[in-house]
Length: 406
Ligand SMILES: [Mg+2]
Image 1: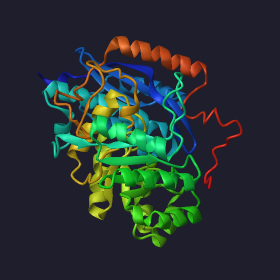
Image 2 (image 1 turned 30 degrees about the vertical axis):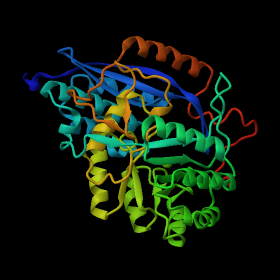
Image 3 (image 1 turned 90 degrees about the vertical axis):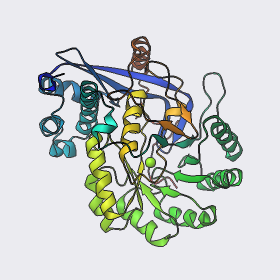
């Protein structure tokens, strides 16, 4: 096929929300569902490329604003498109651009792969690994509508972790902390270490601790042999102070270090040992690859962030994870919390704590249009109820999500 004839003719943007098994708690809120925008980029020849990014009115408006600029473009020309619609200056001043462009680039690369008959990982330099190890993402949870699924203490959490490890074979556990008092969370970490003496355990309080609290708890956790402590405090200076006092415990970040713009300061300040790359925050698959290469130069470990993805972004993350040589930590994924997915053939499956990278051309996944319709209707319901990922925790009546909390 002559790829020079490929031209983008149309883009559809569809919000989709998929509930989780039980509401997930984190330091500044609670998620009852994963809210995403699904995009379908269609070429003049009728090829469809899929993309996905975080939902929200600002990102949806941003995507729709970009459509006239993208229509008519060659889907192979993603670097020109980036400078046209995802310009680094625009991205710095208006963060939604990065998310919107990430979805557009993902769809363009899906089209590229379909045209040349190769999976996206081959367009990114080729696979280093066929299976991507993932971490069990362990959240304290409220009960669901069936009054089940609550996780409120160490015993609940270890029972849930045992279930998930038995089900999916995870070898890495990630505790989403910053929800209960640090003393209670320390008990949970001790319980997990007791039940899983060989597992890698990482803890992410999402900036809920002060520098003093973080240092104090890093000392108490010294014997628990954590893989890393992620964003215990908010901000690079705070991370640097914790890191200087607790050299035995690697510090990781996707908040203090939110985009590659933060890399230089983080490295100069010796603020972190591990950075979680994020293709959506960074403005696409290629930017995430460049970021991982930069971290290779500076010998900073690479892990992979998850903001909550449906099957399209999950497939993109698997392709990305398969080509990053220095991805030395299991990738994060909310995916095992979803009750369903919008992709044909049902949700992607775990095996031995990992997921296989899709092998078909492009992303290797396609949309189940009936499911997209159902979960799009659900997205409208959540939106009408004003229940989105930034509405905080409705069950904490006086809760203002201040950081630090302890
Ligand atoms: Mg994090």
